Length: 104
Image (cartoon, rainbow, N blue to C red; front, side, top):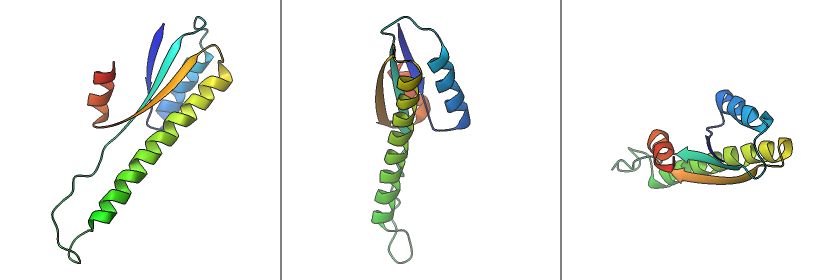
């Protein structure tokens, strides 16, 4: 059996993670935890009247790190509560709606 479990770190995601963790799935059920993040489009502005490109780069890096943290946290919960699951994580840049549908 294969399960795709998308997470954004919200309380609703945590509820879904706990539901999967507490179900008696067959041994070696594969669970792919997917976290999507969107990057900020760079707007052409001139400093000091606008925001620097470094600011956008830092924002994008933080978005990736947050998505990665959410995926790892979900994996830890699943692995601790249900060791029969084969858990992998995947962090993908893009619109969550599109990323989830493409992965499914």
